Length: 137
Ligand SMILES: [Zn+2]
Image (cartoon, rainbow, N blue to C red; front, side, top):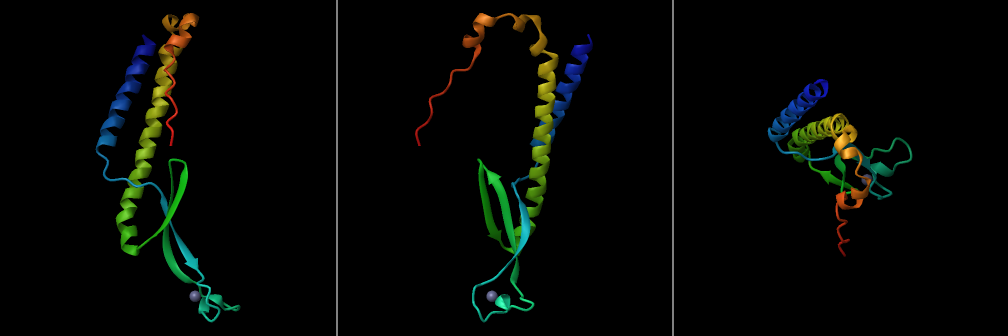
């Protein structure tokens, strides 16, 4: 059947993604940008009106984790250690995103349109996952 071959192709690609994910090295989210700053001292070269020379560059790492923006300054040596992790994180995200896309396709090819799962209106409440109680913080 056409569906079955497409589904097994998609599943084979997911298996491939699992292997690639498993082989990834250390990861870190974010990107590094260079920042120049003024120190506030009115006699400093960074505060000159004409041709000010700001301090820097400083390396600043920014990322979003659990919905929060995080940013911190990092030393030059740290940036070198960080770079491969940032690159690996991008690859990690790309692989996960592909996995999600393939899973959505499999869903469309299999259970969304199947007769078995189609006519069970009364069972919808039972089928839904139980809503976990909100954890108090
Ligand atoms: Zn200054």
